[in-house]
Length: 463
Ligand code: PLP
Image 1 (cartoon, helix red, strand yellow):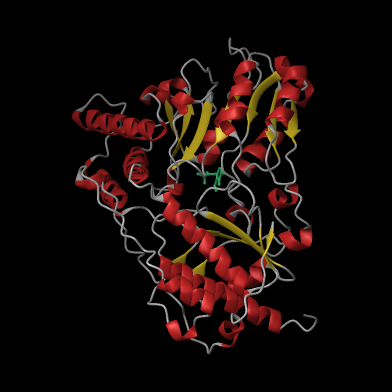
Image 2 (image 1 turned 90 degrees about the vertical axis):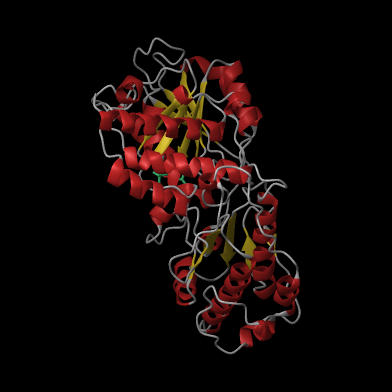
């Protein structure tokens, strides 16, 4: 955790007159602190170069649609224009059932298979290894429940132990616990891999466990990038330990895929979860990578769709949108020089500016390897919800903990599992940028955060 020093001169920002909404308009330089001014002057907003590929897969910055500085991209991302057009077109012209033997059915089947190829390319696998689902939650559930017990005739047959971590999204954490509760009479069990105080799983700890209990373990599931802190787990190492002990390995890569290059062909990962709406695709569609030879029991029983692993007529429209989003992300990730270094620097600048203005702000997990888009900043003595309400008045969107748990006043269990004290976790606000975030938005957002926190602190009698 980084406790930031006060920077002399930044106080003038707190005294600045009310400039009203700080939406996506040009930065009002006269209100800026020296730190913000220095940052504003840097030639930082390099244009992303267009690619020499088909115009549909060329990445362009979409219009936001409304005046908002959107720093909540771990909750969801804005669908790319190309995704919106493809969805619109598919609803009008490609609404056949891909299982129908008709011209419309064939057309829909072709579109689904094209999307499968686009998604497979994004993570470096064969299209046959992609199972379309309704999103990250279903993919995680399928990976876990589809691997547990039963007579799968595979390495997982009869095994009843799920190994996972307390840092996981509830799609894994709660699912693992629920599966174990349901099968408790059959001696199913969840083993929690404890992380260090930095929230990172030590591969040695996994190896020690597998040395003792590998033959009982149906699946090990560890997320790639944490949705609240951005902390990265050593997925390649964990996967290769599992392979060595003959245990299948799943990673929830919902907050990783589309943001960083992913190549499952060079890793020992058996199952990998992704979700379209985290990389500028539509909501309600995702995929599970299922390495060839990894047998899964279907979680949704019905027709033979998705090679018998997920019954139900395919969400053709969503799948088409996910395919386009995957292709766009792939083209963005292949830009040279790599584009994420620029955005990581923007994220870091945001943290520096906020900490310069708020002496008690604490950037959580700042010493860890983190995905480039995520920042979690705790404001000591404040409730995150109060900060968010004030930020909303400035048209800045962020969130407190996982989006699905906001509204609850309990501190995030994930932050507590990282060893963060409850009083700090209470004031933790997650800011998550995207490849559309600009430097001027970062400056305006930092200013809004400082003003909001100053206002809240001033209104507290004891501070
Ligand atoms: N896993 C992680 C790490 C997530 O952040 C999320 C959503 O925020 C999910 C799973 C669930 O994904 P979905 O919203 O597509 O069900």
